[in-house]
Every structure is written in C-alpha cells, then in structure tokens.
Image (cartoon, rainbow, N blue to C red; front, side, top):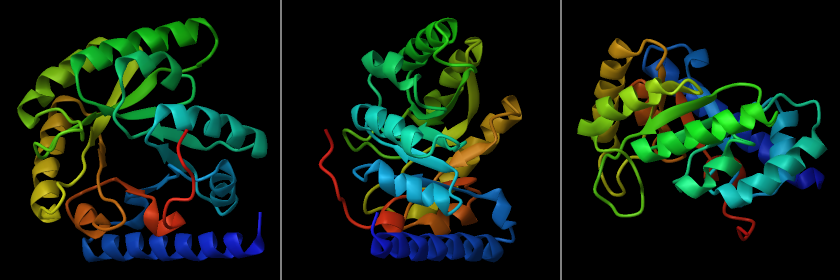
Length: 243
C-alpha cells in the first residue's frame, strides 16, 4: 500500500473523528456515545486493513456479494483484528445464509420474512460451527416512500420488533434509517429518535440508533444517533466496481 494512500486515509479519519467529537460537544453528549462505522463498499480490503491499523474497529458493507470476499481478504490481511462487520444495505432473503457467515450485525431488517430467514440461517450457521453467537440486528425504518431504499414503515415497527425478539438466535439492538434524499435531515432524524425511544421502552437492550452519513452526521448526532455510517468522507469517491 502506498504511503500516499496511508496518509490520505489517516487525515480523513482524523477529520471525521473531529467532526463527530464536535457534534457530540454541540449536543451536550460524550464522544464515546457515538460509534464511527466505516463504510467500505466499493473499496478494497487493503483500505479497511489500513483503517484497522489506525484504530478503526467497525466496518460496513452494502452488498452481500461484494462483502463476502472482502471480509475474507481482510481476515487474511489482519488475522489478529477483532473488527466487527455490519451489513447496512438491502438484503434479499436468499442471501441470509451467506450474510450470517461474515456479518456480526445486520442493520437492514425491514420485514418479518427477512427476520425469519435470518433466524433460520443463524441457527444453521451456529450448528455448523460457522458462527459462535446470535446475530445482532437493527430494524431499518423507512422515512420516505422512495423505491429501492428499503425500510419498514414506522407504524409497523412494533410488529417487526415483536417478531425479531421471538427468535432465539436474533438480538434486537435498535433502529437504523437513511434521511430522505432532498429532505430535511433534522425532521427525519427527529422522527427516528422518537421511534427509537419508544422501542427502548419496550425492549431495553435495543439501544442503538444508527443514523447519519458523511453529509448529515451532525444532525443525526444532535438527535441521538449512537452510530454514524461514513464512507465518502473517509475514503473518497468510489474506487472499485462491485462484483
């Protein structure tokens, strides 16, 4: 890996961490209340390895097919790493068996049928020795009607939460959402914050609110986000063509 790339990523990581810290201070929160999730989609495993060397511990992918090989390559590059991998993109039920083999967390559960598929896949993976623990999941909440973005309607969140907690190999950890394109992120994250609070009242372990990306992380932190998902601000424009 070139020293130039190493320097670029180190500087970007420093700047993003400073933004998160500043957003926490502005919101009267501690910086350790917000986790930085590095979104490495379309970037090589070597970039993720460099981020790990710089202290980054959590990574995210959007496409199961791309992630599968990348996570394996990362493990070969950094075999001692304890990095956690999150699936944050839309997930088809027929990919459940594959995703549970590499993902520690699936943040994009938006239907009872997907929850059922993940339960079956996780149970089978544990029985086969491919996993050692249940799968942490977040409910993806749809905050707009845009096609192709996924998300459970806000009114359906209680039903989906009940379904997830019925499964012994899934652990409900909270909610995730993407602010609507062209919309006011403060409105979107304010809505998500209320949904997250109601969920915590019924399920005290569902403490995560995954919200905020490169362009709107400050707004998300102000509304209580516990995890921001940052790709462009860390790694720049797309470098790879996804397989």
